[in-house]
Length: 406
Length: 183
Image (cartoon, rainbow over all chains, first blue to last red; front, side, top):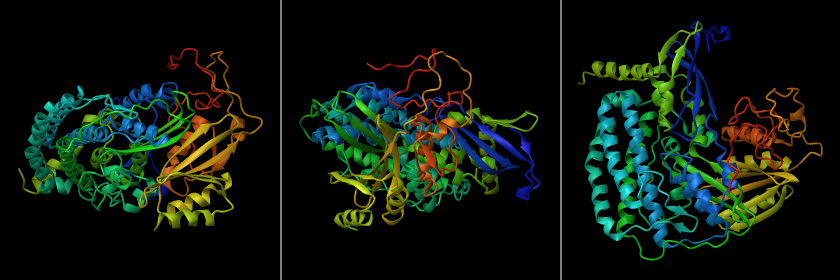
């Protein structure tokens, strides 16, 4: 912490270190960013993680396969179903178990509902950072509808507990489906409005276009995943590349854009929600009858790999079994593990007022930004988290005035 | 690009490096290679075949360490996992603290790192391997030759040196720790 002059940098501007973090209660990976800034400009970034390392892999190796499903569900609070999904895929891969059709559809429904509410959560917060509090209100109100849908289907707004190796734990009642479809349909008009607000607003475009660019080559180099990679023109999605559950039976489009900036990441998430709604509706109307559980008795010795496209990118699980009732090795790779290091490429050279939205663009957690403080050498506090959000909002405000918009 | 051609090409090109070639299923390929060949095989998968580096997973197998480097060849939907076995050096560092609860930092002579099993780092080839090698370094106690920055990633700063939580001989070192013992 502190400022110093770097003779080699050719700049007389003093360097200040901006610590962001580390406490981060919502996301699975709490982060601490150390931004080095020269005046307004970010010249270096270092990321530290591990503050909330809970040793889930080790913990899972001490649990039975059934219990592990619940343990991994607690890795993430927002995309709580993506880890059980990948874990079940991995366990089923050990012995090449085929799960019943109905279970495949139910899994897809839960996963897509989760994607919609996760993207809405991100969109709302992105709106807040950019001083579009109306977007924030709309998005979060809309998210309630989806959470209601999830509650009708699974009994919970989050942490659904629907997954088990071999199938799903609970069936979807046929009398619930009409009500659910109505609710899913009801989000579309507001989603259209949000789409227009996001894609046609010149101020928002000026504020987000061309900042925080992740080039295609860098996206491949960092192994970026999900919307972060697809915004940079990497047309990859495990739902398309290695289909599982019912994803190969539904017609849907992969959304890919080419610019890799914050605007493109915004657009991808908005458009992906339409695809998710499409998949949700298809699966709910075409839900096949039959069993929901393959009733796996034993998991033989062997190894398996399971993946799932979570809202933030591909989740990867590797499971090794020795024939006992618990995994001897369980490796978990969350998408943020790959997406987080891309900051090195996206944030250097940008301004501090854009830092909040760039750091937010890969969809990590936001609580860290509430903990931001800018200090100079004497340790006097210059900015805190609220100030940084305000800085970001003021920039939008001044752009609005300049462009003559209300 | 055809599946058979890729598999045949791999077998021919790395005939001297492959120890075991097993096709578990059409989508899963496990290739055991010599530890010293990891860099050239990984580079071929990443550069020439266009695989995405997914992650590496390490495991303590009592007599040796095993690392699996998972690559996904998306065009053909094949998950290629390179298996590498690292023999444990005969003189292994034992866990630094034996339950006495001493919180004194162990001597930082770097002596512990000298006996760690070693393999070439993939981080200079692609950035995606950077973090996971840091993770394997601290959790399993493996050394990656040529890694630009082997700092701690997940464990706290006051974690004693030479104690690796994913090793089989890991013993609880903190008498005050409350940890889940499983079922």
